[in-house]
Each structure stands twice: as structure tokens, then as C-alpha cells.
Length: 166
Image 1 (cartoon, rainbow, N blue to C red):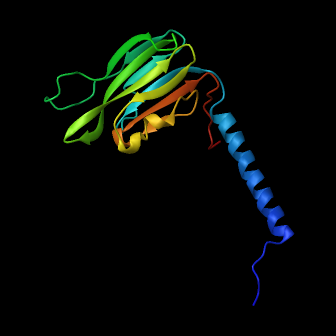
Image 2: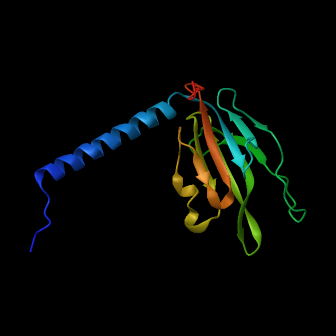
Image 3: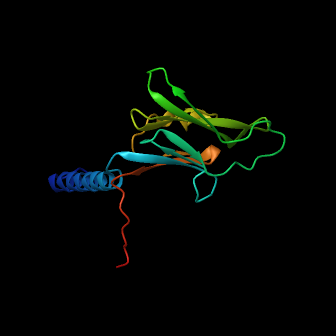
């Protein structure tokens, strides 16, 4: 009976492939998320236009359009508030009505924009196992909350339009 053991060349080949994949990952991550964020856009649903844009340089938020919600809800979304968080940093909170329902009621989702740290975090939401808020603080990587159909993306000073067809 033949034994299925690892040979030295198998181990070396596996190590080289892992190092190559890790290197490609780091290069792509560096190119994609390079630079300080200038602002962040909050997208709701399948819209290609952000519902809210937060400018980190000026500390302002711009509501681009209102959420289309049933008349049974008393509030108008999005709700934008500013203040200070527990660490004393200047922040902007954006509250949206998510798509995730509990007992037929859609749940609110709150995104915190820390202007001093130029970071974002989903601080309040309801979803299975709270997967959205468990993503933690981000300083460049987009946050995606699929159960509530919300995503937050950074726009950095290092962003460059690349024409891949030429």
C-alpha cells in the first residue's frame, strides 16, 4: 500500500504559492486603499448614488436623497447628527432604516464617522449574529451590511481613475 506523505518539493511549492498569494494580496490592498480618506459615501440598496456623503476635511455631511420608506414609520431617514463620542472625538452619526426585519419591523442602522481618526464603524444595527457591527473600525476598507443593504466606502486622496482598456 502506497503512503501519501508530503515530499520536500510539495512543501516548498506550497510555501512559494502562499507567499506569492500573500504578496499579491498586499500589493492590491496597498494600491486600492492608499492615501488618507477625503470623504466616505453611504449607499443604500442598489442605488449607485450615495444616500449620504461625509467630508472628513470639512466635518460636514450631505444628504443626497431621502429613503423611500412606508408611511407607517414616523421618522424620515437618513438622520444625520454630530457630536462627540466617548473618546472625545468629533463624530457624525448617520442613521438609516435597514431592510432587516424583526417581527415585521425594519431595524435602524447607525454608522459613526470619527472625523479626528478618519474612520468609520457601524455602531448599532440588528442582523443575524450582528455581523454588520462586528466588522469593527475601518480606516480604508469598505464596510458592508448585506442584511440591511447598506455599504460605506471611502474616497481617498490616492484614488486614481485607471482606464484598463487603453
